[in-house]
Image (cartoon, rainbow, N blue to C red; front, side, top):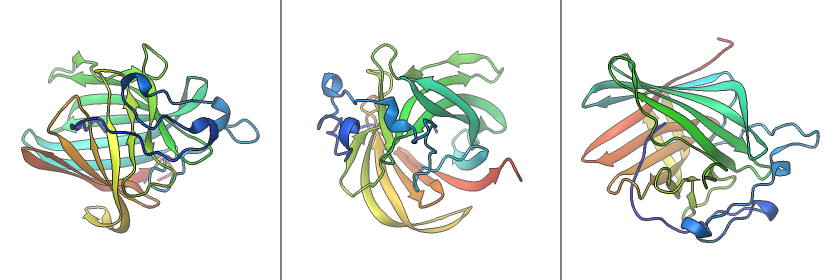
Length: 247
């Protein structure tokens, strides 16, 4: 989901282990996560499944979100594909993210994720395109790939998030600098898809778009269920359905 946010960069508070540890402060040149491909495979050398309770990505699953915006109804379709992409010698799961406004495709993004042995879910980049009303690509701004032109992966979901933790979700200077902070673990949420308790609530932002802050709510065993974006008028993006390829 392409929802950017803005404030100043903060220091990492991510609890990682061994080769997965990162510098205490994730600012520019000091941010240099140590990615060891062996930390992303099981004993047989197979890629670890992405089964973090707050960010489960099972191939064949599709999450559908809706939001009422000034341009009309926005529908965000997030499909976990069975495709993979090798980045920094890590096998990443490919997630297709489509955004429609009043049934017209406005954005298409391929996101790349992988989970380490500790349980952290890492973000290795994205290939994104924006479209005009005639279906022409008008921008690829925000695209990046870890290991290319100084871009570095970040953590989108900690293995054991705790209130107060702050972390860098991605880093490609002046292009992709999203940050996250854990606010609470006991939020209650009601959306079209259902009612959820004990949700993880985060604050997410980027210094590249100051003044924009998102609050995201993740339900255990489900994943992202609600986003509230604060920039002028509040925008509420909520989960309306989950489907699987077997249905």
